[in-house]
Amino acid sequence: MITPTTVAAVLGIWTAVGIPAGILVGRHLRHLGEPMHERPAAWPETYPEMRTILDTVITANRSARRPVVDVAGLVRVRRDLGQLDCGTYQACTRSPGGWSSFAAFRLVREVIAVIPLGHPDTAAILRLAADLAEQNNAARVALLAATTKD
Image 1 (cartoon, rainbow, N blue to C red):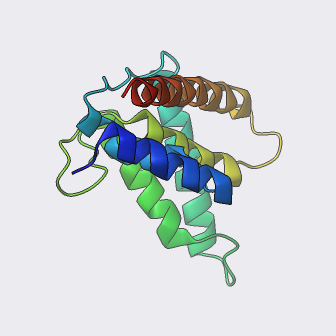
Image 2 (cartoon, rainbow, N blue to C red; image 1 turned 60 degrees about the vertical axis):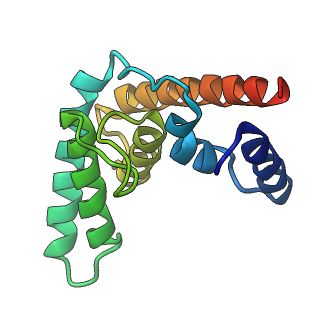
């Protein structure tokens, strides 16, 4: 069974070796009774832009002789973004579907990695990434505060 003390110990070990703490926190936040975050206000405007960017990059690389990106990986990113938008995203097969700011941040980072230079929607997507990073940091601080009370 995962307890807050166990999570804190693992977070300390992972942080010491350089693994981001958000990986573990994202998977187990619901099990610790912490509330999940709401979608950032920028999500409805930026999701269609991110989907358009992914569609363009995937189409261009599918028809290219030598793709410069992992096309299958971007297809999975596009699928997962769609599930987040619909509220049916599942971090694992046993978790209930819903919104996950941790998964959203990871997926937005994947989109940022393939945005063409000078794209007009870059600023909005970077602002969304900043909002998600702040949500994730707040959740991490709350989880660590809860684990130190034990």
